[in-house]
Length: 58
Image (tube, rainbow, N blue to C red; front, side, top):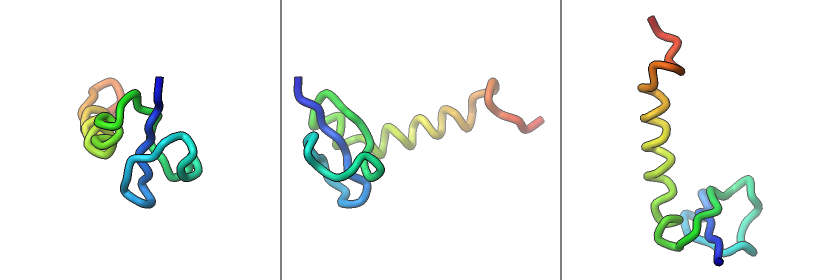
């Protein structure tokens, strides 16, 4: 099984020999999943921002 990462420094999908982990999101099972890494991260942030179990605002 191949693994892919999204490099936030270079804004591209990389294989395991790419940039250091500090600059990457992943791993993802497919290149297509890695291509959408930023969208997935944004959706997760939105979900967490609106999760009543984690929202401290009253």
